[in-house]
Amino acid sequence: MKERRQVYSFYRQLAILLKAGFSLMRSLGFLAESGSNRSLIPALRSVIGRIEAGCTFWGALEHEATYFSTLEVQLIRAGEESGKLPIVLDRLADSGMRHIKLRNQIATVAVYPCLVMMGAVLLIVILSVFVLPNFVQFYGQYRMKLPLPARITMKLSHLIVHHWVILALGVLLIVVLIRGILSMPPVRYAWDSLKLRYTVLGPLTKEYIVVHTCGTLSMLLESGINLIRALELVRDGVPNRVVRKTIDRIGKELTAGHGIEGPLRDTAIFPRLVVDMIASGVEAGSLPENLEHATEIYQEQLDTKLHLFQNMTEPALVLVVGAVVMFVVFSFFLTYVQLITKMAGGY
Image 1: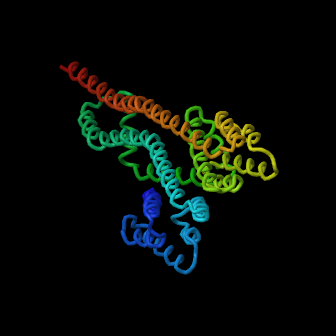
Image 2: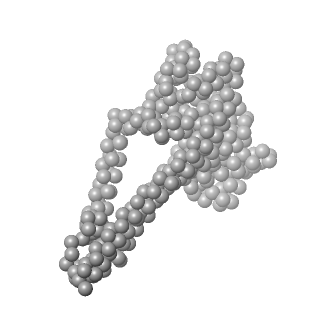
Image 3: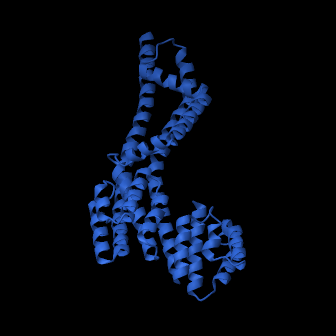
């Protein structure tokens, strides 16, 4: 993620220098020596060397596939050939930073529940290691049978304290197995299809795809790349295989001379509003503008839904952690009451 930020920062800085009247070589030399994007310095020096040897800018970037994607290189090629390189670089920087912001929002929604659950597990571990052993040792002097909640807590304590290595290896093995299974094409396709059908996450996944696809397609078309080639580039950049197959089918329909509206309406991935905006854009010759409007609309909707989803998740997680804490406290409380009762009866 850090490298991507530096790439987008490089695009922005290069656009500013070119707009200020600096030549491409002078701008690249300045950025390579400034050190503001340190991880890119070797790549930039390599790019400068290739340009000096007679290569085009986009051709030089093509050799640095680690940093510059095929989509970005094709956009830069279109900008270089049309004389709109600064504009294209600005659009790449805007689109890239928007994409990073969106991914950070999604990561926050996904990671927060994991952190809360880890906190609950950590609480159990602390109680198991530092509190329960002393409590059981004291309680054992009275040779009483522990209440059921206390016995459950003790079993969990024993499992965590004495078998944590096995538990950790088991979790790691499960993660590796799941990743291995999901790497199989049929399973991955079924999983991608399932993600689009989730009751809660399905709409969020679809809106993320709409924002990514429409935004990228708008940028490609505005840069002068034809629709069929633009769809190919968008297809290659989509992680969801179901959506990738859908875009590929749309491209084939266009190549066969059919319109874009029919294939779009046949799929349940793109909302009706987006299909209508694309159809009207094709008819009026304003497809890039309509795609950009669709991106803005669904970007706003996605931001709102992510924020709402996070607000709904937080109370639920608090209840889960509270339930765990209350169960542990309740087990202690029952044991304490039983102990007091026995001691009182003994006198």
